[in-house]
Image: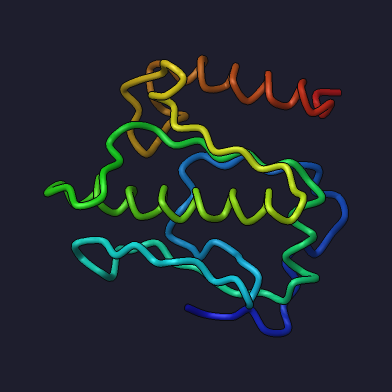
Length: 148
């Protein structure tokens, strides 16, 4: 686990929200004093990671709404390397969302199969059902009053 020393989490007050499609490959941010449990992938180097930041910086993330979307093919311990890797990212995303919300933020994690949208790989925006995924994001922006 790493810490983000001397760097700012949000460098501007112009960010109004975060919509992320299968974020991973870079560390999820957590307060330095609340580092999460790392779920190891079968190939440990592919495991999700976390980075600690000072609480004041982390709290900036609680001031904006955040939504994370994940598709199918996510399974920790799978023989399929990709499914296993994205399973660890999804497990980390769950902890990230829980931590944001515990500190008064507004974060949501959506596993698309759980809302009836199936068949999506890591590149959600390139799938045949990308319009459905776009509609979810547009609805969310509208609910947050950010569609103007």
